[in-house]
Structures are given as C-alpha cells and as structure tokens.
Length: 275
Image (cartoon, rainbow, N blue to C red):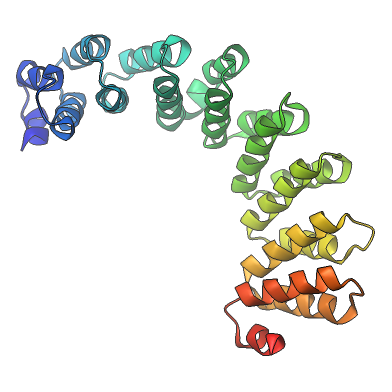
C-alpha cells in the first residue's frame, strides 16, 4: 500500500517521514523511497536528495539511489547519481550509482563513466564501471572494453573487460578476444578469454575452444580450461570433438580432463563413453 501512495501524488512529505524514521522496518523505508521515486510530484527528486544526505542506513540509501534513477525528472536524476558516483565516501553507494547511470542513460552516460574509471582508484568501483560500459550498446563502448582488455593496468580490470566482451557475442568482440588470446602471456587472462568464448554461444567460439583443446603445444592448464568449457557447452559438435581428442591424446592428464567433461554433459553418448 505504501508504494501506491507515490502513484496518487501529494504524499511525498508523508513518505519522506517513513524513509527518515529509523524506528520503522527497513523494508518499509526502502519501499517508501521507491514510492517517492515513482511519484510525479515536482519536489520528489529534491526530497530524495535531502533524504540521501540525512539517512545513515546503507540499504535505505541504496534504495534512494535506485528510486532517484527511476524518477521522471531525468536531468536532475542524472546530476544526483553523478554526484554520488563521483564523490560519495561509501564505495557501495558509488558502485550503485555507476550501475544506475549505465543502465538508465546508456551511451549518454559513457563519457562520465569513463572519467570515473580514470579518477576512482577503488578496484571494485572501476570493475563496476567496466560492467556498466559493457551494458551500453555501441562502437565507442565496445572499443573502450577492448582497450581495457588489452592494456588495463591490473589483471582484474582486464578480466572484467574480457568478460563483458564475451557477453557482447559479436563477431567484432570475438575477433578482438582472439587477438588477445594469441598475444597474451598472462595465463589467468588467457583462461578468462576462454571463458568469454564459452559465453558467446557461436560456432566460431566453439571452434576456437576445440582448437585450443587439441593443441599439444599449448600449456596443459589452458587446454584443460578449454576442455572444461567444451563440456559445459554440451553440444553434439562439442561431444564429437571431445571424443576425437580422447581417442588420440597421449597425455593421461588431458584424457582424465576429457572424461570429466563427459561427466558434465547431459548426453547418453557422453555417459556411454564414461562406461
């Protein structure tokens, strides 16, 4: 019932009182904040900003961020979220605001998100920016992901960008990931690229996993990751290739990994191969 008060209008003051009241149930306070965000009252967003500055409860403050992102006063909502994302002392609040900027404003927020990425030294905030950029459609966002995946100053940032490229599932993203895999020396980064291929669900990506799994010149740990992701895919084509690898592979360790991949596949043929 509290949420619908926001739809009727004229209840912002009452709802604000609920949000402020630390004696109230936390979930009720969060619902009241969302109701203000949905309200068409002209003062709704001003009220939310005031509440954000006054309230100390972290969960309620995050609800206020989400509520502001839903408000129909888009310019003022953007300005508020940007203020939080840039300078709030609470890391989780900055992450939440970054997420809302990317989700709600897409490419219009890209430049500001990239400035936050460059300025904020907190690794988790920067990873959240990469995630937000990954949710934005368009060549500029994808190009930034490629740049970070190639040259990001920390492996965790590179791996986050690689994951987001895999989520894109485009031919261009596959081509860039293939280049990174071919030139990269960091084993964990290469393994993250294989995971990204496994997420792409395309024939080219599956063929790349097969090629890596077959390659006896490749590091065995990398081959084992490729075998694992082929098993996770569970396609008939992947099973055919795993059987060929098992039948022709001299390494006992690799053959054991193929058997494990069979065990992950929901296939009668794979089950028969195990027994």
